[in-house]
Structures are given as C-alpha cells and as structure tokens.
Image (tube, rainbow, N blue to C red):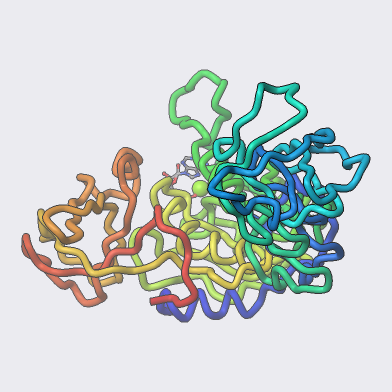
Length: 410
Ligand code: AMP
Ligand code: MG
C-alpha cells in the first residue's frame, strides 16, 4: 500500500504532455498555449481618437484676446473610415471615437469642450486649450509589432481570447484536448434509462466521471459497461487503443469478480493498485496496450473523490497545465470528526468564510456509498493517517475543490 503522494507522483511520471494542435480561437478557453504569441502588427494599428469631438492642431486651441478661437470645420471622419483631407491651420474636422486621426491634426478636443451651431455647423469654437496628443491613442500603445504578448504555457481564458482576437490569431497553437475512455464494470450495473430489476443498480459512475472529465477540459467517451467476465472486459478494452487515458470504475478490489487488474496484467501492466486512503483504497494504475489506465473504485463516492485526487491532475498534465493541484488551506472544523480511521481520510465538507476565518462543516454520513455526502461539498478535509480524532473547533487542512489549481501538491 502506497501513500497518496507517492501514488500521484508515480502516475504523473508515467503520463506525457500531448502534442500541439491549431484550434479555432472560440474553442480554446481553458487550453494551454503551446507557443509564444508574438504581435505581427501594432495595436492599435493606427493613431485614433479616444473621444467624439474635433481633430485640430493644438496651437489653434489657444485663446486669442480672451476669446475662444473659432475654426472652420472641413468635414468629418467616423470609425471605420479614413479622412479625405488633412487638417490645416485654422480648421478642424469632426471625429468619432476609434476613427483614425486625420493627417495634420495633432490633438482631439472632446465635443463637450466645444460650441457650434449643430451637427452640420461649418464652424466650431474651442473652449479649452489642448496639448499635443490630447485624446489620441497612438499606434502600438497597447502592443507593438514583434512584442511577445503571451508565453507558451499560458492558460487561455476570456481575457487571453480577447487579445488573441485583437491580434487576428484565428487558429491558436495549443496543447490538444485529451480523449478519455470511460468504462463501467459490473453485472449489477444497468443504464440510467433501464428499469431496476432485483439486484441491479444504475450506472452513476460513468455519468459522474464523464462530467468531471469535461470539467477538466478533456473529451469524454462513455464506452458502456463491461460484465464481470474476462471476455467482456477484453472486448471493451479492444476499443480503447486510440484514447489518451482509460478510466474504469469498479472491479479493482479483491472480490472474486474484480478482474480489471487481471486483464491489465494480461494486456499491459499494473504499476500499483492500493493507496493508503479512504474513501478508495483500491485504485489501480498502469496501462493497457500502452494507453495509461486509471482504475477507480466502484463505490460512487470513492470513484468521485479518487478522480479529483488522481484523475484530474493527470488530465491537466496531459493537456499541458503546470498548475495541477487544488490548493490546501487551514480551516477550523466546526463539527469535529470522531470516527477513527487508520488510513488518510478525505472527508467531504463545506468550507465557508465566516467571522474572518475559514470554517468547515462535514456533509454528513461519510460512507463511500452515500452520494448525497457530495452535495454541497466544496472541499475535502484531510484527516492524517493513524486514527486521529478531530474535536469541534480543531484546525485541519482542507483541499479546496472549487478553487483553481496551484503549482504545489501542498
Ligand atoms: P466493485 O469495486 O466493483 O466491487 O464495486 C464496489 C461498489 O460500487 C459496488 O457496490 C458496486 O455495485 C458499486 N458500483 C460499481 N460500479 C458502479 C457504477 N458504475 N455506478 C454505481 N455504482 C457502482
Ligand atoms: Mg464490481
């Protein structure tokens, strides 16, 4: 039996970052850049107005004899167009936000600081002096041609997507999405739209795992449920060769019909299959036909929790992330935890910020068949190995499932 830390370290050592691909920009949220992004143009591409107003020569804005200067308006320029003439001394042009500054003009005065006879007026009075460059957004202010704007390894979110769009990167170089095969096992498992016959239960694991895989940014493919026979398992594993990871649930314990490890050994390798934790001691890792296989326990809560601890970091590594682990913080456990468990215990809990500190409360019956203990849980309280009793008010560590991943395991 190995520790959680040793298990995760050994698993991560076996999986390699996937290849790069070009992916349409709008599909890249959550993905990792595989190359630096270098601006091919200045952004903004041209000097443009930051305001609706008038483009002019700043020296014409100076008052004469205490009177505002009056300039002749020679035309206008809207966003998306280029002025047809230059701005000469003694003249101004109407200009809208985002429009290119006409040649000859060196400043823009906002409309509120001018007076004229209306939108078609051929004159304008300048009510305030403006400096050279006033209200002009210069070409290259934001990004300059040749500048490295983002480095490889960056996680793409909405802000990065906005910048990539600005730069015209329609197909983005990223680490490709992982493709995950999800396989249920067990003669008792029926699909969710089937009536329950005596002795049967519904396949919750495959659906829970499918959602959790998608949540980690990967593509999930449910391959159905293998019966508890070597033939049925072999048949299902014959379909898994093209995937980046196989996720199974059930069939990895020590029962007569727990055959997943046998088929792994027959068609690949079992690296290890017991981890010193609860829920979920039986977690097998190895490969089948060269495809890494993470064999999760059958009990729904165990399968959910072990996916969080092992499956999710593996998927993140495959997809190029450097931040693999949920952050752990110190919390006060309001209700304590009396049950003595010799293995490392991950207790489902709700952590909230209350009176200037993080307070955790367990979510009830922690049996690994009690799926409702997952509801409202946003954290796993970590009770160390060795049967430690936690009294109400004690400080413990909690892994924050609803916080983004950080660099370190602890
Ligand atoms: P096993 O490890 O195969 O002995 O499964 C442990 C427990 O998890 C048993 O009670 C199974 O019925 C249950 N189980 C296994 N697979 C699933 C599944 N896909 N959905 C829900 N429960 C399952
Ligand atoms: Mg089973």
